Image: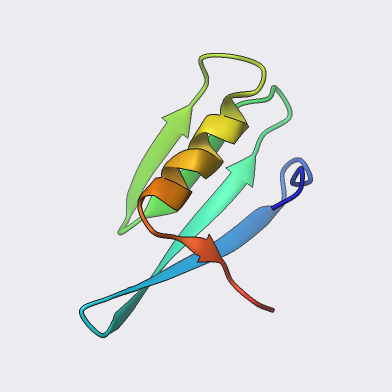
Length: 68
């Protein structure tokens, strides 16, 4: 994914054991990033480019951007 727009919500998906799971990612104005997965918020704010760490974590968990 290219540099996501700030404060826009992006949908990511993965399939595990035949079930599709979704996560919602947001890059925030201050450079932090977060995603919501199974009702839990995961925030990344350790640097101005923390959103990149959040995206990498989604990828490590097997999530890909949803095709809209």
